[in-house]
Length: 159
Image (cartoon, rainbow, N blue to C red; front, side, top):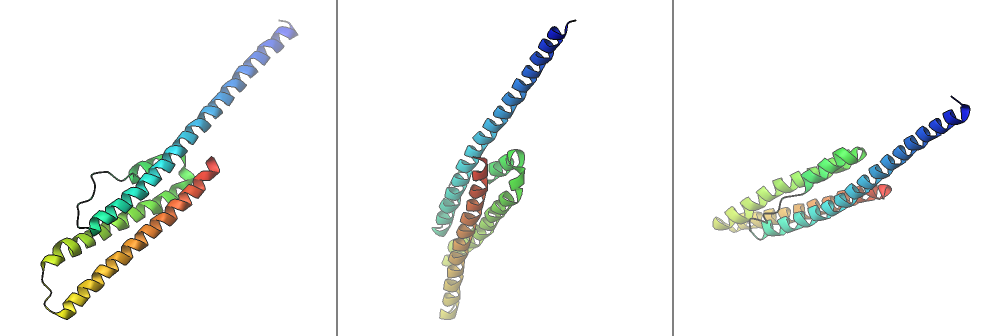
């Protein structure tokens, strides 16, 4: 076998291998970019869902039938952005705090209004409890907004 044939074969194999590696890297980057875009949309939907749910709870309504996107967010982060696990976990905790808050609101708004206060003192305590729930909702929404902003900021590194 001549040297020129050997060089041609090695060059061909190297070119094919390099082309494969570049294509694979490009496809991986394109997939991560697509997942990044999906994650941004899901986080925005989560923020809207949480806001809608809080308003429904305060109005004494059941809330929407829409499902929170937090599980999808956690799945995408776990698979494509594992370095952001702690931020996604904190966002999930915010959703958990919301569930606790919603139970408190349901009890206060749906159950307590039907019970007549025994005294003015009881009525004042009930009003204070309602104000506490509203303050807690504000804290949850603010915390969620901060955590969402941190995730969005981290995601911009990948854009």
